Amino acid sequence: DVKVTQSSRYLVKRTGEKVFLECVQDMDHENMFWYRQDPGLGLRLIYFSYDVKMKEKGDIPEGYSVSREKKERFSLILESASTNQTSMYLCASSLGHSNSPLHFGNGTRLTVT
Amino acid sequence: AQTVTQSQPEMSVQEAETVTLSCTYDTSESDYYLFWYKQPPSRQMILVIRQEAYKQQNATENRFSVNFQKAAKSFSLKISDSQLGDAAMYFCASLSGGSNYKLTFGKGTLLTVNP
Image (cartoon, rainbow over all chains, first blue to last red; front, side):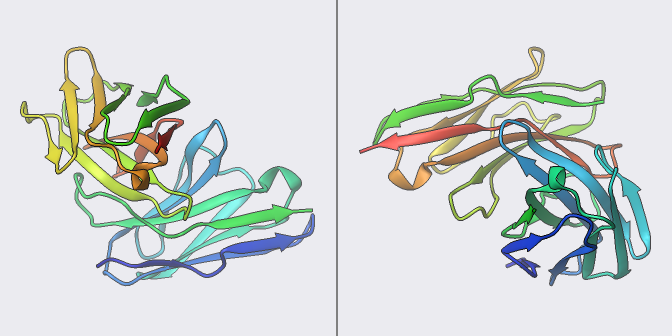
């Protein structure tokens, strides 16, 4: 079974802090994704990566960056956290062909105060 | 660009009854895939069912089935013999073959199952 692990389930940070959200998958998947989930808005794609050191912006990349130095790990970085980045963050991975479903982690609920 | 619309923010069903969740999508691609995901209170997103657009036959997974109407761009999910464990947020999603594997999600439908 594919396992996608997010390092924190809950996180509380202060405005202006640099925040790292870590995600690791154990099935050698090529693609990895970071989504943000907000009530009434569904899931919105922040960034994704289809290979090591490769990244593409999603629909809402502003205020975020990512890092993929190893195939199994995909990090989301908030350079200077703001209160409007309080949200649920979901990491996902998939194989590198178009009908491959996404496998999700359990999510990190980030609160920025 | 793809869009996915779920017009029912909330639905409820009695245990053992059948419920249908609606989804419409819009894409200019000829090659695409459609998915239903379930997110229970544990927050783990779980794939429920998927449909390839080139297949005319509706996908079925045990008590879950879809009604795929390609011309109408409709992809509804039917849950038969509803169980308490089916209570969750359900998301419809689409993926086009040329999209670098990005899924576009609807806003979700919260399903309540009443005992």
